Image 1 (cartoon, rainbow, N blue to C red):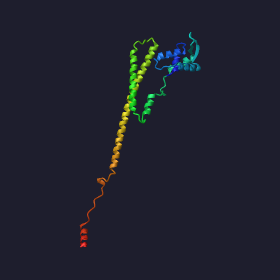
Image 2: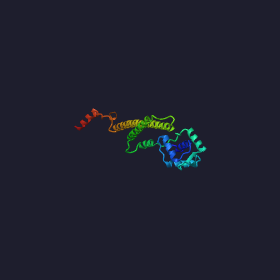
Image 3: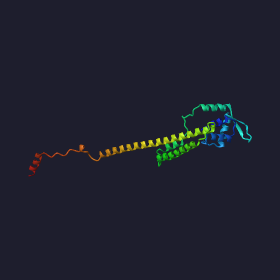
Image 4: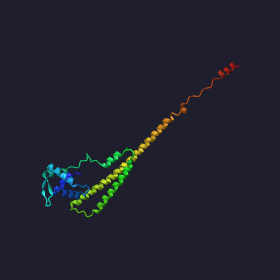
Length: 225
């Protein structure tokens, strides 16, 4: 999330002070990514340091106002024109959790998946319910339209996450079956190898002893008389 560019976009409508920017940011995004005043003023200080904003007096209550500069407007135009870079995706805690659960001792990864799926489906239902309640969205109210876009993105995101979890579980089942088949094949090979060492097979048994010739038997008897 780019707080920096979000604040620049809000300031383009006119000078604002910190708390006002926080309120408008949360209103525009439906409080999906809540900010605290400290984050806002830290970002404003950095923007001022970079020449993107300047302090522009105070309002009637004595709040310091900030205004966007030409450099800030150019920065904002470049941000709107440039696609979000997906070559370096942000770290996803769920993906990391499943990756670490693979092979972790004492952890059944399918239990992890099922627990997450329950939570994801519940979130998707909550978002869908919020969308159904947003029947009074005015096309002229940019905050309402912006919030609806964010809400629909959350719905699509949770739907995709649920499908991905189904895919992960199906893949684990296939891998488990493949491992079971391989182990069964190895067991058969071990049994076959063990049977070959129990004793000579009928094909390799030594030939039976032939009886001695009758003449030699008779000769032995004649000598014994």
